[in-house]
Length: 313
Image (tube, rainbow, N blue to C red):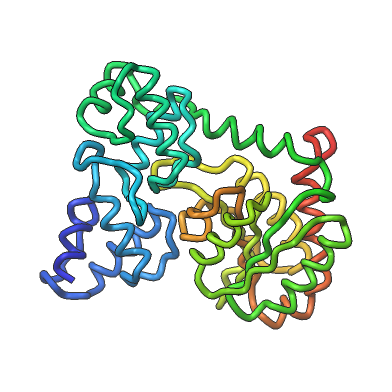
């Protein structure tokens, strides 16, 4: 717990009056504030996702050499490199803080274009070149433009589109109804039923679906909400956000629940998918199951509007 408190403090989240090593209310509040800032689920518990985010948040660009490794390097330094490359027109894929193959290709392209050795390693010479070119990561990224381009180059109807439907448990019947409705509309559906979001993301990425739609239940009076990918740095998936807004608009009247809104998050399944992705938190199980057919209809309609040309949406 001392290490957790030290890392939180270094990031500006003090543990209040808690003693060093004490998991008291000040530490819980600091963890919750950090989780909120990073787009994680806010529970005040330093679980695996929160601990990983704490470690990643401690890296600054230049702290270490960055390159393609197995497993992939992760950290805020990787996200900063991705932002800087994207601001110069080199597409590293989404700004997710994960040094994958797209980031590797973008780095090599950058090195080739500025006359550096194409060693695919972001070290001092590459950082100096980025600095000379004024790559700050604050200008619009080519990644945002290309996500929209890829979406609108695909068919403008569900026919020919592939959608992954993810269920982490308890909604298999609802997921099957949604899959049937999408299939009837001409879509290709991949049903993912695994409790781990990272595993679902890997499966969706493996078959390169057009969109991922995750389903979950909510305990308590939280209402209906929908999340899309938004990095702690501020970069967000434009098509993920648009799909989330359409899903939320369709679900709230059907579920007759409180509209808990649309939120950008960086939970693993949203961060690690390489396509527009949303997770819909539907509410209490009894209500969702009772209105499962209407939920399927609403989600199919939302996806129809998402794939349609802008003028027809």
